Image (tube, rainbow, N blue to C red; front, side, top):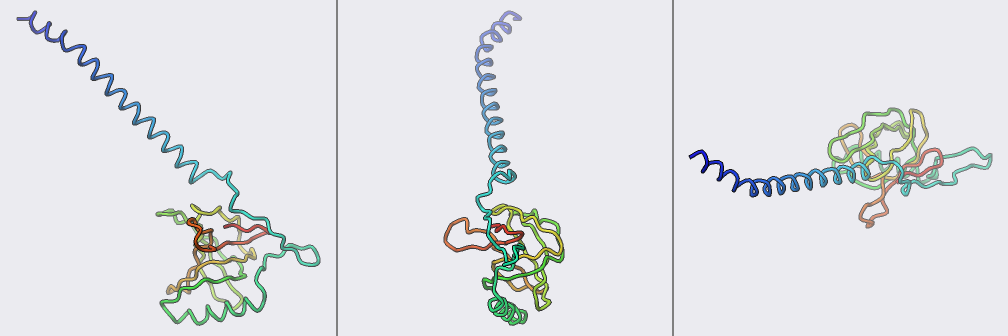
Length: 187
């Protein structure tokens, strides 16, 4: 009886060997695919070598001092009037361009699309949240008290409002928005 059992094991051994090879190949392919996916994810989301959405703009006044106030006084006055009206209308949504001062840097929002967040104050004293998508545009190197200009979409909230879409349109259908600081436009 022992011989028969041993013979069966010997007969099945080549089959098991083939099965083990197939399983190992499948596992190897899955691991290779996972590594390739991880590398692609890293290059897409974390690598900072792509500066295609950063423009150098020539914003100098006559004395040669860099100036980031890209919007005229007339434009700024109109934008501030529009924001004042929007404070009382909960369904307010519109594109706006502003000159502002960064008053506070906030923690990044890492849920879903990653966003760089900070608070700005405009000339009329109104405080707004800026939510800049850093999955679609480069992080803006700002610090407290920086003078910036930005263009984005305003949406009402119970704290004054939020400005988002401060990046290029990934589908290329809209002009998109941007943030300008220290002579560079980030979109």
